[in-house]
Length: 153
Image (cartoon, rainbow, N blue to C red; front, side, top):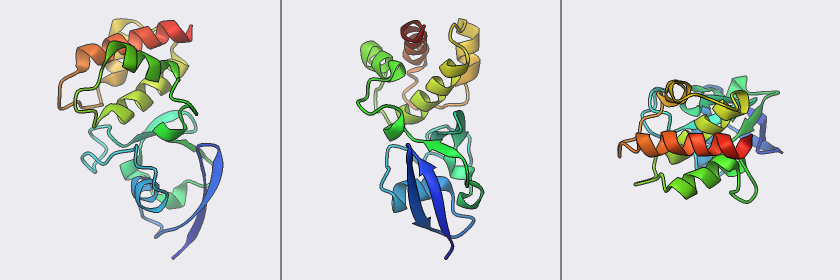
């Protein structure tokens, strides 16, 4: 089995995995970084979203063999103390119901806000539309993204 060195959450992590193993399974099964969730397995729901070089990316479809020389950030690495402005806004607005999709929602929102510091409601909806929430917390998610944008400006 091939060995890979992945740059995850600011650390180099060595893993052994088949070349076509999705990053999601490496994170969860090999590295015990279980904040990233399995949702659909076809990159449609957003539960497995991580940052690859700062871009929100579905980890269920990223093969470990193509991830050399990139910086991977999971929900565990978004902040050391859980005080990233998006995480703070999520708590302030009390977004989660079941919570399953929330790591992916937060990772999508934080990548979006790093590129757009003052988004409109329409831009927020567009950025977040690919993340599915079974509990339909969409109004609270949108509100939390607005609050986070204010905290980041």
